[in-house]
Image 1: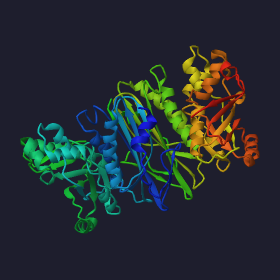
Image 2: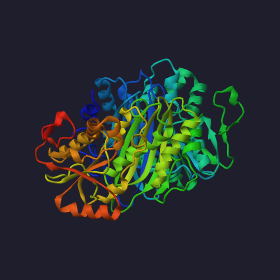
Image 3: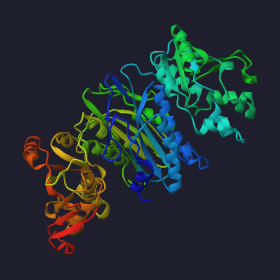
Image 4: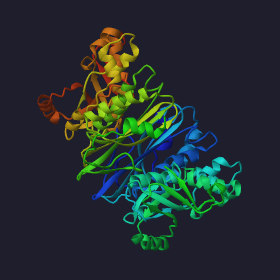
Length: 312
Length: 312
């Protein structure tokens, strides 16, 4: 099938573009109006077959997830997404595969009324690059670098589910769903503007990404209470508490937000949770140490001291 | 080598970002201020090894060209480029290869003081996706859809050089340069704002891309004077006039601009050429026919009628 046929058939839709799209797909570039008083936010991410997804994963999930991981970055900036470009490299995909891919992709795009404004389809080993543009009130974007000593550390949902899905043999629905259909925390990210002191999305693993946040904030450290780390019940059942906890700390592919809140803003976060229904879990606090203390026994014999030092 | 080492070593540079970059590489996303009264323009393009470039092409040229083809789209919109993201998928590239790639990429980026604000490095078959954001005065962007009957059709430089380089056996410097180091016509594109009625960059081949422009402008046609098509002397020498002309018409990978100018604006274009030193060639005019007439004998026996109908 010819490239342009593919694009026309699956990616150029009769759906009306939102008002900020002056020119969408079909010219040399897209033209987008910008909101006064806002700054642009741009994120991008490539997924490669055999590395970021495997042949068993459904095309629907690959399409959904390629967009979700980018929207998770948008969420971590507190931004509102506005447009998407998609670069799709296909080797031997059938029209059915591309159709299911597009279905998954647009399922998430439509949830946030996001227009696909550009991209290309090329021949080659299967890979997907998605770029998303968003907007944030000028000077207000959530960054990694604003955490302070004694800020509370939160995560936006249970961790380790995607990693457990890859590890476990069974078919645990909640884990499979966490792996294949991660939910970008866009509403939460936007609600945290002016409230969180720093934020990052968890893609490489909680401890690693928290480490990026604390390093950027001035080589700070953290005290993490292991008993507070939210986990998937099915991960604990399938792999045991110790391995489930390890995957929650280091597994990655969570696409939850990790963020810090100053002591004086904690009550505002409580208010937010009670009015919005958004739920976050406080898992520790920022320290001046430059390293990470993992507090609590967990169930591991390796951690039967009260404090375990994790270095990043 | 670890992904982040690569990024740090070659792509995160001490160079200062321009003032519109509030947050560059290193957070979940880039944050960019926008100019009041402007609209955003976004273009993106993927190059895949074995399809868009081959193993013989230097890493320096691959890096330069991956950016150039995107800047050519920015030029075709009359926009001023502001930022770049780069998604680089590498299988077995050596650090030397990546260094040369980065050198070529930044040679062009630095020419226009363009910051690299995001992207990723992934493992997999060699491919490069570049996305460029630009700005254009609100409502003024050059589009494909504005040509009118009797507008003059121009191209910004000689055509067919890149295609001739791929076809010819020898080492003609001008052809090799056209293939490996295309010059995006950014200054011309910006100068054409308010002057050209429609524009497109020539990537698929002059006739094909002109066809896109005329179709978008309302299924118009063109009368093209073959004797006016600018060509590379080395292409004519190496391949003969007939094949050189065919490649100029259909070869592609030119990354010149094709644009239309209304009769009343022709004097302004002349003024522009004489003050700026930018040179364009008038190659025909827009007709109402919906098809393309190729006028003039060229040197081809296939074209020894005075008019040859090309259909798109």
